[in-house]
Amino acid sequence: MSAKNEIFVLVGSPGSGKGSVSHLCIKEFGWEQLSTGDLCRKHIAEQTEIGKEIDFAIKSGKLVSDSIIVDMVNKWLIDQIESGANVLLDGYPRNLAQAEALDAFLKDEKFADIGLRIIKFAVPDEVVVDRLCNRCICSNKDCQAVYSMAKDSPCKPKEDMVCDACASPLHVRSDDTIETIKERLSIYHEYEDSMLDFYTRKGNEILKVDATKPLVEVFESFKKVVGLKD
Ligand code: ADP
Image 1 (cartoon, helix red, strand yellow):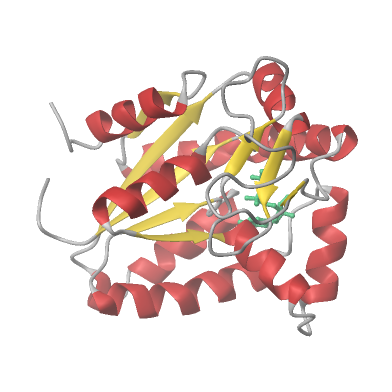
Image 2: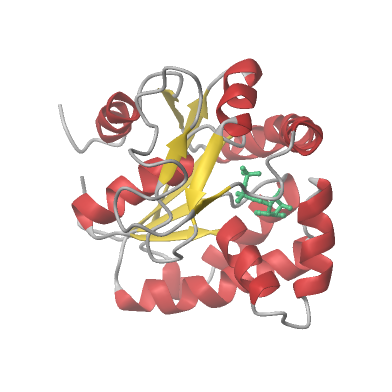
């Protein structure tokens, strides 16, 4: 892989494993991750001015307005790019308007050397519905380990609703209800094609990983498609 800075855009439905693969990249390569979902939840927790609007959108499974999201991301990106780190965008862009906004942002000559890689995590809806309905997350913001409570799952915590890694309580995300999961999936499908078409027209290859596989295999295939292993 070249030495220049790279931005990895992770595209995939809710529950496709973008966040989990991002955490492995942070651990193995020291890259930086921006999860727009996490940033939104931080605004809600800190009860910021825009937190109320964000809370309403998240609870109903809708997208937060592009202007709020684009502004948050651009501010974060400026700091990260200046620090020279490779960056994972987990959950951004999520529609054509956001893809165009990222494109406009990167047109600045300061960012001329940055490479953009698009990785699509492919997984059928029924698999992610099952994953999200059974998902529990560590409530410790610095840990955020993900568990599955599905019957026979190898990813259950050893002690009920307690994180194996840091012993904090586990919780279920407020938007992991069946109605909201369906809404999030339908919104994802509504915007996916136009966003990916935009990148294809620009000449960016859409790299694909089979995200139905166990996490370690998805991570291996991620590394392969981005050229980090043969
Ligand atoms: P998921 O991808 O599983 O739905 P996320 O944590 O990425 O979970 O996002 C949770 C919610 O945060 C979304 O349903 C949406 O309301 C909001 N959100 C996250 N990223 C964006 C974005 N790029 N644009 C608009 N809203 C977003």
